[in-house]
Length: 115
Length: 110
Image (cartoon, rainbow over all chains, first blue to last red; front, side, top):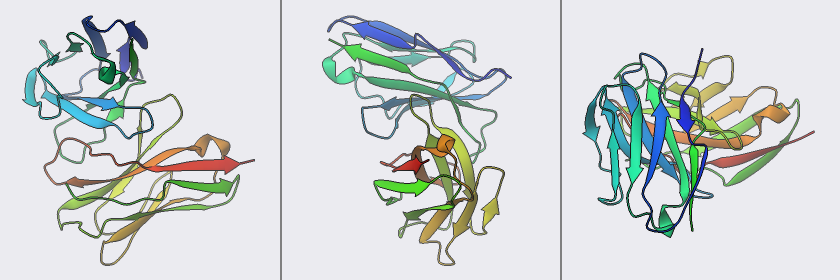
């Protein structure tokens, strides 16, 4: 079946531009996560949704980062006034249910480069 | 979050077994041990997880020390496709997010 998809796969932005990154989770998956992965590092948690409710946004690095999942399916991560330090791969993951040991299925990521 | 320690890199040969170690001396009784791996230019993928007993699945085996302060991921017969960064993660019961460390970069020689 179809896995998690993300678009665009690559994004180049000029410093100060706003960007929107899209995640299509596996159909029927209740939980959705966003992670940020800097070059050479492991992914770092940004935020978590259960259906349309954003239950944890403790990892968002600043108020320039905003995520939404209005209908409990597709999610968008928006970064306003991008800075060079925002350059990273942004990973989306989904899991079927809300059990704490549920497997997370990751998309291929969006590679963001801010010039 | 409890911390894990893994070697930065390991190397093995194709068709040989690989043992990837992970130390987690501050593990709590409700922490599960998860392994994910990340192939080049892909998102991480689930490998295996366990609590106390050793676990086997089609991808790998997980051997957990009796005191739970360390564990080993075992790939029984490595292939070139197994070259990836392997992450050992402690996930508390009730926790949703995954907390990744640096992982171990595994190189497989043909």
